[in-house]
Image 1 (cartoon, one colour):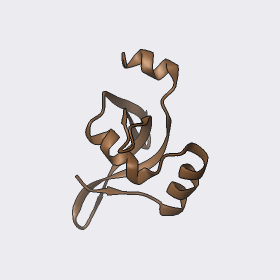
Image 2 (cartoon, one colour):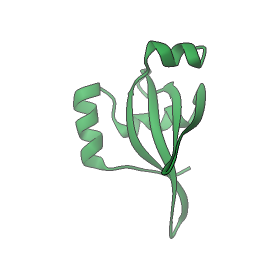
Image 3 (cartoon, helix red, strand yellow):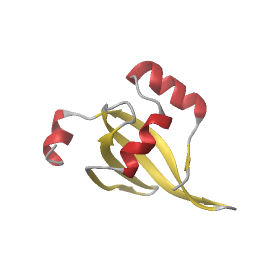
Image 4 (tube, one colour):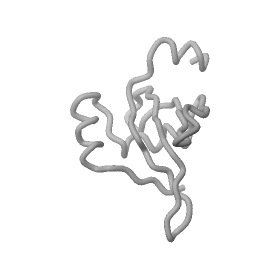
Amino acid sequence: MRFKWDQKKSELVEKTRGVSFEQAQIAIKNAFGSGLLNDDPEQYVAVGFSSRGVLISVIHEFREDEDGIFVWIVTLWKTTKEEKRRYQI
C-alpha cells in the first residue's frame, strides 16, 4: 500500500497535534475501526495507533496515478472520547 500527502500540511499538523502524516500510515494499515465519511469526495476515516503509539483518527482517500492506486492522507487528530466509544476502543 502506497501513501502520499502534502508535506507542508503534515508538518503543520505535527506542530499543532503532535503526530505527522508519516506516523499515521500504521494507523490506517492496522485500524481498529474505519468507515466511509463522505461521498463526494469519497473519504474514509480510520482509527488506530500511530507509529508512536498515539490513538488517532485519520481522514484519507484512495487516488490513482500512473503507478496505480495509493492512499492520500487528508488530515488527522487525536481520537476523541466519542470516537473511542463508537469503535469500542
